[in-house]
Image (cartoon, rainbow, N blue to C red; front, side, top):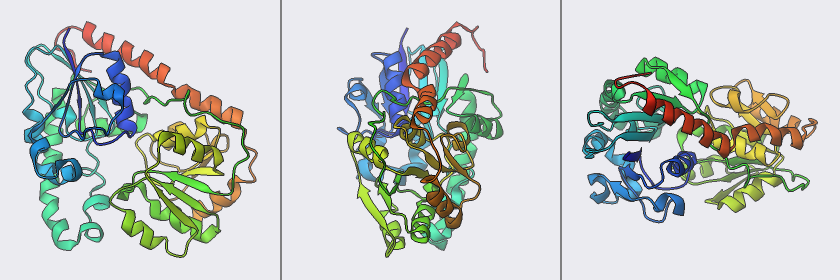
Length: 370
């Protein structure tokens, strides 16, 4: 059997790339097809695969500004030659699921989300307050065309596997397809408690992008007076630093996995103010025995047990999050219970369940669609 993996882009090791790494363990030796690859940006386990890139790889500054080439993504992803391939496993949050399978091949999509900025999060990425009123008007027809293409190509997938029930509902809504739910892998062997007494800070570990709503976490730190540390980088850095002026907020920039684990262990709590499709960070934090303060929407409802492993905040306002910052230190959270909950999302469980799903997909009669 010849198999390939397809991923949107390889420019860092975030949650999607960690899932791809685990899928690569199941499909050892499979080529990885991707729009853009920045050498040295992914783990050795991913880099061991043969990585094939699209023509976007050769465009100016593609490794840094690949998102600017969004209108070219359909042409790029459809240009991959998959003749002779029996199994395609795409790990997709943008264009990867739209690869064109050859006759007789099975295509299983591990879907992180339908293209969020083309569907329900356009204002967070391309609203007038983000890119200006003129550019926002110009971008709207482009993203509307991307949404139509995204829906039109959804039938190229034989089986969808969603990272959460929240994403499965979005797949049903936008693609009119059912999806099996398999939660992403979390390295609970690496992320574990060390018994330390937490310090007096809350922590956000996040890409600095609009939908993460980090301004809410910053304003909550200002209201509560409780220090906030933010680990991560991204295009919103300058805006958020301006927002945080005078507040007890520290921007840590990029941090290694070892440093992030240390930050988790020392935090009063880890905060997640945005609406996540799943959210790897809350589970990593819980694996370290630390409670999570998350918005009561999206994937957090599936990963955080309110009052047991953290707090689910009812509204995305600074006042609501500030109240949770203050309350979390007095709540009798049990690190052992929190850790046990996180272990239900382990990498081993992901590998076992995905192996079952792949085997079922290959064994189904030709033409079967879920």
